[in-house]
Amino acid sequence: MAEDIPASAEPTTDRDERFAWLDRSLATLCLGSVIIVLVAGFVQVRFGTYDMSWGAAFSALTDEAIWFNRGTWEAFLLGERLPEGVSIESRIVWAQRVPRVVVAVFVGMNLAVSGAIFQAVTRNELASPFILGVSSGAGLMILLTLVVLSGFTLVIPLALTTVTLTTSALLPLFAALGGIVAFGLVYMIAWKNGTSPVRLVLAGVVVGMVFTSLQRALFFFAQDIAVVQQAIAWTTGSITGVQWEEVRIILPSTVVAMGIALLSARQLNVLLLGEKTASSLGMNVERTRFALSAVAVLAAAASIAVAGIVSFVGLVVPHVVRNLIGSDYKRLIIGCLFAGPALMVAADVGARLGPLALNGSMGQIPVGIVTGLVGGPYFLYLMRKKEAVGDI
Image (cartoon, rainbow, N blue to C red):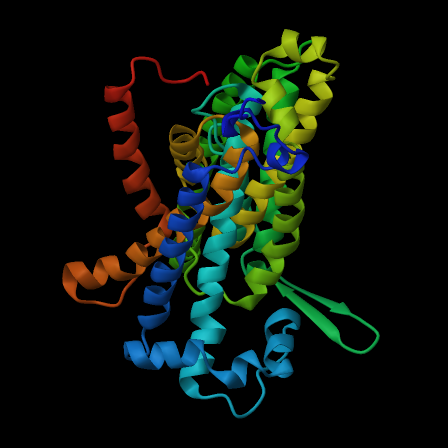
């Protein structure tokens, strides 16, 4: 009589092997993050200078004149004017408040994934866009633009119209350029017959300190207090007042960077094994490290271009996700894609409602302050809990 084959001994299919990385812990993290984004996003839509009830906010979000009108989506995606027939509540919600939530989602994605990639490249869980000089370079370029080009206007004549570029319009471009140049400088300093994780981190710290000092020096050359306030908002990190234009700015870079990051999970896992092991497996370590760093810089620069320098998201989120689901980058990148937006949207709600809870005013604080207040205590707790902090 043939013996029964236990269920555990049944052969696994190719489909089972392909999706073996998707387990309950990752699914729970993703589901919980989506719930946080939806709840916090609805709170963000509800509150603002224009007061509306919860029911009015829900009605505006589900307004058929928005969802089933081609003209509204052309307005959002192409920059056209909203068509007639849309209520004032729907206009406020969809033109001002929904894009803020969407930008927060994309910024959270970019910063979290950028931090995760930098941590693999340097094999150090404390690495982030800020540690490697990207944020400092972007902040310096923002201040240079505001101080040197204050009041600058460039008129470009085209065939059918003219395009006017002001200092504010150029800030996202220069912010991204500053981050890219800063990391290029870090890579050049760290290069000595190749690079190493330690030299990259040390070079990033040095470049960040120099650029931060230059930022502080530039404040003394600003003549207009409004310029100083705008610079502080950018260097602190804020998404107050963003609209669909910022969504259109960040969307292409986000799609490219997130797609490459997901496809590069295997290379990131191999880098964690060390340079010798990675080389023995046939990997060109320097080329791979540089290419993946470029993806991380692209993601960080995209977020800086629309939100300024938001601290701690690229540092905290990958570490939290790693503690929850492990260090496999196929799972870690996906976890960061969901956890990053959850932290960012929730922090932005705190930035909006914090002053209201403290003194009853509708003033807002930069979201970077909230993420810093969350990230700082978390790492103090981490240092007390873990004996060794640093290497992955």
